[in-house]
Amino acid sequence: MDVRATTEAPGETGADTIAIGLFEDEGIAHDTPGGALGALVEAGEARAAFRKLALTHTDGKRWLVAGLGKRDEFDPERARIVAGGVLGRARELGARSLCWELPHHVSDAHAAAFVEGTVMGAYEFKMFKSGGDEDDDGPELGELVVSAHHDVAAPVETGRIVAESVNLTRDLQNRPANDLTPTALTERAREIADRHDTLSLEVMGRAEIEAAGMGAFAGVAQGTYEDPQLITLRYDGPDAAGPVLGFVGKAVTFDSGGISIKPGNKMSDMKFDMSGGAAVLGATAAIARLNLPVKLIAVIGATENLPSGRSMKPGDILRARNGTTIEVINTDAEGRLVLADCLHHAVERGAERLVDLATLTGAIVTTLGTTYAGLMGTDDEWCEEVSAAGRRAGEILWRLPLHPEYAELIKGRYGDILNAVENRRAASVTAAEFLKRFVGDVPWTHLDIAGVAWDTNKAYAPKGGTGYGVRLLVELASSITP
Image (cartoon, rainbow, N blue to C red; front, side):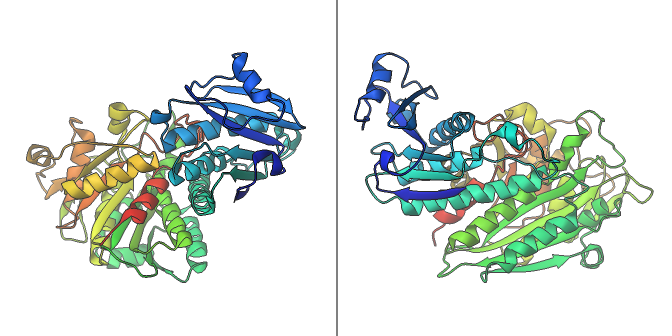
């Protein structure tokens, strides 16, 4: 989709469909010459209640009046939601070009959010469709114009880049596991790195992972015939300042549970177990496109977790890169094993602030549903910085506690630590206590995104992968100061 900003009036942009926002207790800012929009409001058809839509035709164009609710409640996330709803209605109407009149007195973050909600709302995954249904879909919406009294080109461009990076992430999430193998994910990372002089790529395969003493990661990967990949991207932004960021993502491209095999129902969704790694890759791509002045080490641990005659077994003991021995209680608690070596690898490569993202526990879905991701971490200031970035980005986090009593639950009988607690107590928190053993003294936050990574029914991402985490990580990188 082409996206541009303009200071032209909406009716002069050439768009066939124009969206106008309406706040409670405020009128239409700029009506059409015949007063058609005001007439909709007077008739009660157009309402300011959040997400309400009304349609009229005048001057040869479609005009959509979108309810924005109360001005003091209208944050950028609400802008994304409204934009997603308008996008859906515009497509139903056969729009080819959509213009949003930016509401008066809103921030640049709102301008970017209108773009994000529209571009993400227009996303479709058709890679494996055979074709022939184009007529059913109608014409493609090919252009978004943001009209404002002042120049909003910069936030509009930022919104476009971030939204396209989210959609890149969703493409990775939605691809089936027989197509998006660890090697295929590496190929995508290489394509991204090749486009930017500020990015460099290092890849380790099975032999290198084993030779490096990454026994936890290697233990998960030993059951599959697909080659595991430890992907490390390094970004050196222009005039970089502040601490070296470390973004670490779990990318289990299919998780059967291994020997501790999962139930068959909904197992097909386990292609999404690479969502954390996909988000790290998408965010890294966006950061490079935006030329943000930061230094970043992005680490993605990619493998399948499958049962075979050579799979790890419950009762096995693995030795991680940092020397910690891990007693395998459940082979379906594999993500923390992958992340253990990936986190330590990021620290070894020089990361000074860590964030990991992983679809780690089903327990977080029971706890927080599809609204919040779970946050756990070691440094209060860093946890709040990450959480604040999530609030600004519309990807909200709820912090759960770490405590010595939780750490005691994973104390090993035959090895140093257990990879799971058999009675399932505090499952999300004990998983974080496990990861804590591999970050040393580096400030670290763990984001459990299992509930928010797919099928959240958001107006701009209703089905399939959501790309959760990209906006948060980009916002975090944008806000880093020395």
